[in-house]
Amino acid sequence: MTVDPNAATQNFPPPGPAPRRPGAATYLVPALVAGAVAVGLGVYGNVHDPEGTAFNLAGFSSTSAVKSWLATTAMGFAVVQLVSALMLYGRIPGPSWSGVLHRWSGRIAFLVAVPVAVHCLYALGYQTYEPRVLWHSVLGCFFFGAFSAKMLLLRSERLPGWVLPIVGGLVFSALTVVWLTSALWFFRTFGVTT
Amino acid sequence: MKRSGPLFTLLAGLLLALFMLSLNVTEGARSTSTGSESSGDAVSASPTPTASPPSGKPSASPSPSPSPSKTAVPNADYAGRTDDDSSAVAVTLRDGKAVAYFCDGKDQESWLKGDVKADGSMRLTGQNGNVLTGELKGKRISGTVDMGQRKYGFTADKAVKPSGLYRATATVRGAEVDGGWIVLPSGQQVGILNRAGKPSPAPRIDPETGAVTVDGQKLTAEPVTP
Image 1 (cartoon, rainbow over the protein chains, first blue to last red):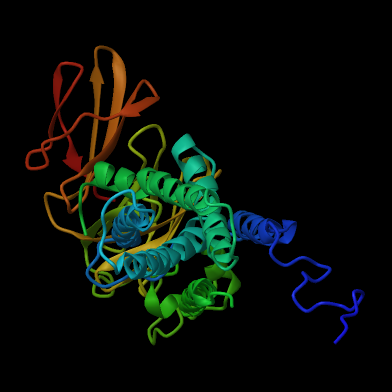
Image 2 (cartoon, one colour):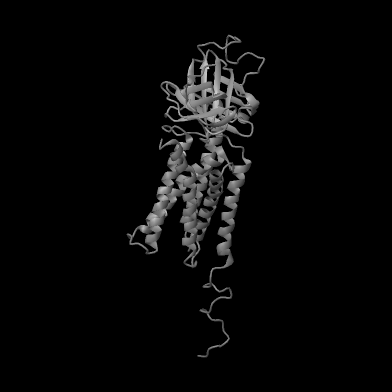
């Protein structure tokens, strides 16, 4: 049996080599989505005339108290995120279910933060009248953009090892500052009230 | 195979946000029934049953009397915060008249006065064109204060002594001193002291007695009535 040396082989890499380093789209799509989300939120907060208030939850004195507690809940889960991420990367010993812990604490933190952001943008808007408020507005928008990017990046395989920790760290840092400039400020100004 | 969990997470967040937003918008449309919507624009834009024409009779009132009856709006004090928590608002109602004080505790304040209609709605005016529009619903007044450069939504709950609205005026060392305090139900105080027209954060008053020391002189802040 003769072998045609010019026959196409099955196991040769196809013309568009698949096992290559991640292409530009891998980063471009999350980056574009992140930018669109962050800018979109900021523009909405700026253009939409603040309604002053939105619905309140029973048992709380003000919507700000509700938001502060929701934000603090999100912050708590964000700390769980940091710890479970360190476990996943083997920096500290962790249980076998630390991956599940990371995924679900992140989901809860995000979903708890969403109503807070909706109230901020709907009732208060993007404001710049003092440094605390400016930082809160900017980083609040940045947070949801960075979070979207993180979620989309999770879908791509063969990322360089440093990408997810960096983006995750940005998300965590943004949330921390957003919390410091709102909920912590609220508790320090008005006391730890419900 | 690509992981779809993160996409579901984002989608869930988006749906939640849209759901909350629709809740807010529908809440806003029912502004008069819930009393939580406080945008002056929205109130004036929508033909609400409470927005009676200035010349006409109060709607839904069988006996159109020019002066609101005492039974419709009981005498009471209300104190609360603005929705952004930057400032405090207090309203005192007496015999169909209202006096209100808006104060951020630093340098922004406004005294506002006006009548309360029988249906509980009020439009109080102050200096520099500041306007408070509010509506009494049950034990709560909600509305907006237009401070010129900004508009603040607020809710003020019924306050019982010692919380409420206090004012002290005196001459201390030749300077006219005018202080206003809002004592919130939590006990927190928001006040501004004007010395010869220059505003500054006010010292604490004793809410039981109204006693306050200004520049070494003892004053008494009195509960404010219209």
